[in-house]
Image (cartoon, rainbow, N blue to C red; front, top):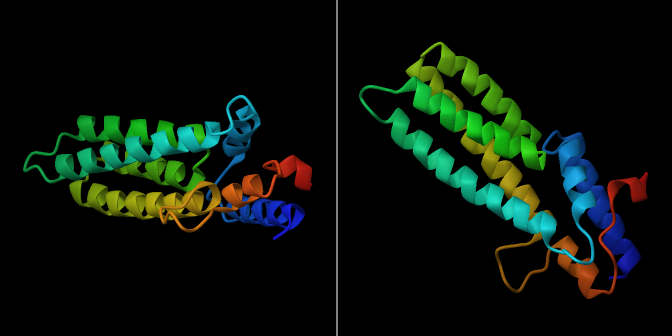
Length: 162
């Protein structure tokens, strides 16, 4: 596939993630920080987000499984997850965390469990979408970004598309 076509596919897919509300402008800001001296910057930041999110979701699961739920602890974990998701532009995860914090303030354990399931679902969705955009788990497949670089092209930014 030609570099131009790969770049168009990359931009179309990225644009779709914005239109569907998975990503917001913060993701574009991350992309602007990536350059030739740090070509894996976005991948590295998003990978850290995945690690932190999985740890926080696990901590939340354990905290909500306790007989006496510590709502302050849960709120602190959700606040961290909201900050992490906001920093990479994972808009739907961030918005779900905002609703989760509201339920936590009500000290509603059942509501918190429902919110935890929702935030897990949104996290898994954005993780799958970002993995397709940046890297894939299966070694013999190439992501759009990897295909563009392999073909000798540069990763386009959304403003290049508009």
